[in-house]
Length: 291
Image (cartoon, rainbow, N blue to C red; front, side, top):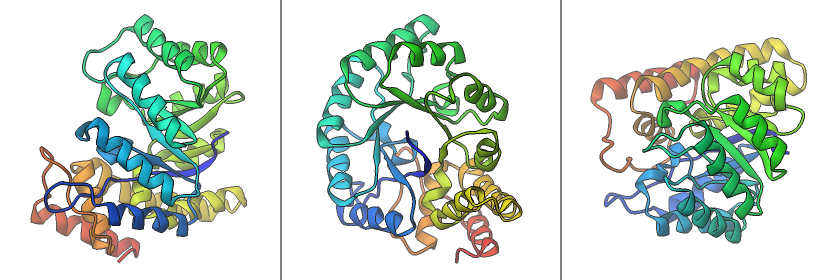
């Protein structure tokens, strides 16, 4: 079972928008030093839709070479066939699990979504985590579909839920929380989700404040609830600025740069932020004590 705080880490690029291999290797060790429980490679913050198939495999190989932490690979593609192809390649590289968002161009109905995940689970002998991220896919995976998939496929072992709804997370915990890992996918729901019985989190702000996220998780596990509450509120403030207020991948990379990590800028069409946004991010990081 996947537990603890995982970082859906960014993909660093150089001035020509090529993968910065040296920085990617450095980031792997940076996150390990922060005592995170694992890495999610090629998630939304990894800009996976902007990477070619070959680049995705390259990133996975580098991260696997450098990391002794559990690695969950994002392998979402728009067709079932291509998702299976990437999933098999990722599993052969040696990742520990696969994170799969719904197809994000044509919107499958409930029957098609179940068939999509069922075919992947049947074809790929690897632990699979569903990725519910309606912010990007516009699909809120029906909980009936989640429950049926869990019942029929033993290799579906978890779900990252980025709906932002504590009610939905609670219902997932009630219906399948005893069978699979329920991971909060939004930073503002980490502590509330864990109180209800979730097993961990995969959150974008862990790119910027990995140690704060780890401290929150440890405080919760050690039943230091007042400390956990204060940390959650601090993380919420950071999350509002670097995830919700601006272009997420641009803001996270800018915040990481301000913290001393030269991770470059996102690939176009995403652009660097303007001066007003940069001042806002810098102010937030200073207030929280990250710079």
